[in-house]
Every structure is written in C-alpha cells, then in structure tokens.
Length: 197
Image (cartoon, rainbow, N blue to C red; front, top):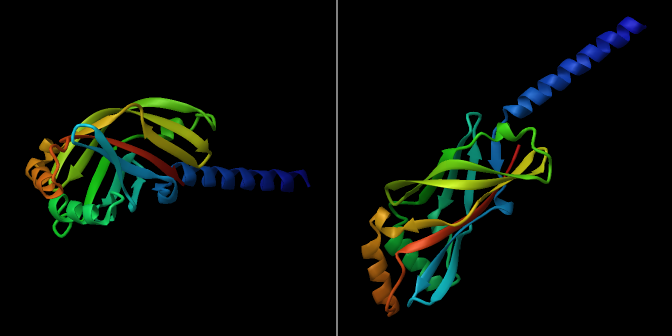
C-alpha cells in the first residue's frame, strides 16, 4: 500500500512540475479589455486633449520580447472628423495600418514577486510608426495582479516627438484645416498593459 502511495505521489509531483514548467514558459497574452494606450495633444498652447486607440493586441514571448500591435484605424479623438484626419493625414492608414511597440522584458524574473506588489524596472522600448522606428529608454512599473496576471505602466511620462517620425508637415496640414494657431509637436504617451498566461 505504501508503495502505491509513493508511486501516486511521485506521479502527482511530476505532473505538477510539468504543469508549472509549461506555465513558466507560456507566452504572456495582452488582455486588451484591461489595457489602454493613449497620447495627449495640446493646441493653441493651452487646450489639452486625450486620444486613444480602441484596438491593441500583443504578447510577450518565451524570450521576453514584447510585441504590441496598435490598430491606427482605431484612433479615437472623441471627434469623428478629427479621427478621419488623423487616419488620412497623419497615420496614412492605407499604407500604415498599424504601429508597433516593442521591447524586451523578462517577466519570469518576477515569479517571486508577491501578488499585489510592484517593482520598477529599466527597459528600452521602441515605437514604430509610419515607417520610422525610435527607441526610448524608460522606467516601467510591473505590478503582479495575480499568479498569472501582471500590469505594466510607465514610471513617469514618455514623450513622443513628431519630428522623429517626419510628421511635422502632417501636423501643419492639420493645423491649417482646423484653423488653429499651434499644435504641439511633442506629445505625451501613456499606457497600462495587462498580460495574462
């Protein structure tokens, strides 16, 4: 009887180890319903507005490579005419249907992180937009929401310069169409990204 218990116990331990191993190396999937990626704009030096993308998707693979796809046609500026101008003039979605946010972050290093706690890490992320790719050194906050869920947010503000993406002419066209005095060419970007596995 004791031998049977020992064999059953051994099988159970092997199965549990196998499950843990598979989970440890499973790909993290972006939970889009609990994630957001947005940016701010400032016009006439004093009016700030928030814009977001309704559709984003992504993963963190076994090697810790982050790959977020941003559907540029899903831009939401809270004004339909402005949405269309962003799609046609700035993003040119017919040629650039998506943008990408990429980087490297080893979430497995947070396996010992207690649920409900946060850690600040340093990372390099790249934003690829309208054919241009620019890297940004950033601090990120990783919060463990559950054993199989983490949230990643910037630790501070990330600024995107339209000039880096050769978008100054597009902004000038927008400014003229909207009858504005100015549109800021540097915009803050914010996100919270929830991953599960």
